[in-house]
Amino acid sequence: QQRQARVPAEFSNLPIQAVFTKALTGLAAVINDNPISQCSLLRLASRSEEGTRDPLQFAANGVLKIAASKQVDRELEPESGDISARVTLVIDILEPWHVTAPHATAGSFESLIVALSEGAGWETVAINYPEPTGTLQSGDAEVGIYSGVVTIELHASRLAQGGAAENRLSINAYIQLCDDEKCLLPEKLTLVV
Image (cartoon, rainbow, N blue to C red; front, side, top):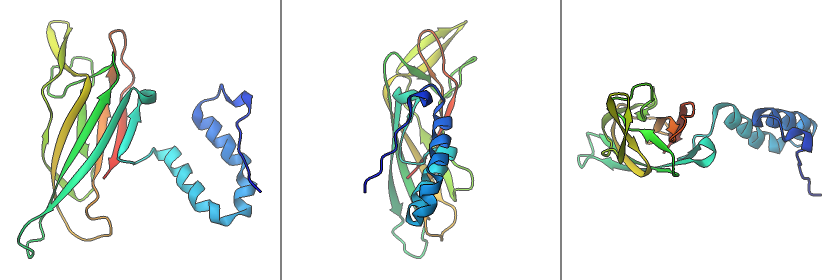
């Protein structure tokens, strides 16, 4: 027997979190009858509460896409055990949107920030941001912006070894998207690679 979940029309005007909560509540009896499905649904509920941690993220309903890839290098001397990693972030922004470049006089705009998550067991060695793809006038100052496709490289070294996920890096990207008329609220995206 195949089951389908459909969202009634009256839910279409609710925020997505309210729809998710109502759907999960409605499925509670079925979940309890099928214990094998509980892990998957708990994972889904966790992602709904905390946000996804995938190496591919979207912001502002798909206006911005950010993808992370990682290359891990071990030093040639096995006894040192030093591990370094290079993470490449490719940000793709649809026109006419842009983000404010870091290290710019941003004024009231939030600059793009990429940083390792705290407590991740890694230390940032360097972050290489490209030159701004354009500028906008904000009062008396020019503000550097990124639009289109932008590639950022983050270099990190491992602080301590051990643990099942010792080579996993958690990266936060703080992004505020703007167009010529408005700026959206800043968003924090977490990518795990």
